[in-house]
Length: 335
Image 1 (cartoon, rainbow, N blue to C red):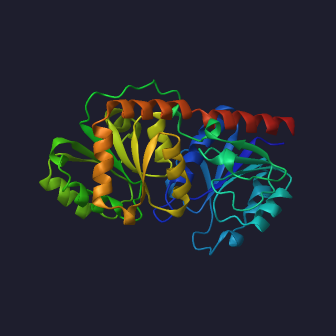
Image 2 (cartoon, rainbow, N blue to C red):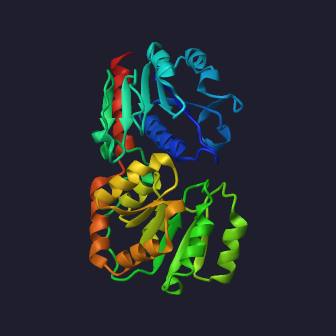
Image 3 (cartoon, rainbow, N blue to C red):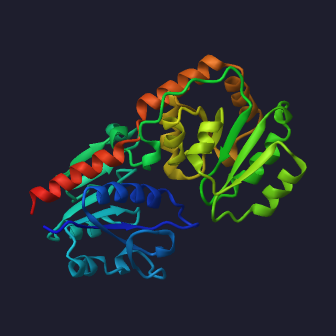
């Protein structure tokens, strides 16, 4: 069996970049182990350093894309899928191909006729998976960039001075301006520095920059080295997506805002596990609730310390290494 591994994933300002980022993290580890990784994507412009076969960006859905034919042409030995668009029928067809198949999941929406299921979420082990697949579940298999692997344990500072605000690479729901507006009425707003992440495809820059011009304690960071910024800040306000895990790995207490349906479960579980506050849906959040959560964390060093410890105990950042090793071992067994 060839050591060519195809990865089917998309990432853009409309669907976000979380799936693409975790596939790039996995691709890097697979490459270290000798695999040739080829991406199949509608968005080749967002993938650097790898061979990318572009799929039709105008295709209505996954059924209109000739993925199976491409896999045979490149003689792939494995297909890794990270896409919510795959239906049960399409996965069944993939399962009939002469290659190993891997589905990277978050939701357990249907039975999976693939060789592996990878779900690194906090709640994954509680999902009722079934089928023939080998299941790699839980944060041990969470796919993260190597910079988050083995982050030194962090202690909470006695006081809070710097807060991180991040709603993803695109902020598709335009949450950042609304939060800045609410925060300006917070009684301790001027006592703190608010570090706002501006992703590469933000569409709301004018409104955010207008706030920063009149508020010298609002610091904008354009497409920053995010781990360095997390290490610098004392706590955070974040969307409840993949950034949740990066914050936990860095020991940064978080207040999570739900920006999409697929973030609901993670926000609840993160709060139950003691690594974050769940503030609920962004469009339902009242100012008093946000201010109360801020006060609770800012004024309680022991709570921030506990959240940091819980996060770093749960997330060691080495999931991509573990998954890559297991997949390569299986490929080599099936030669």
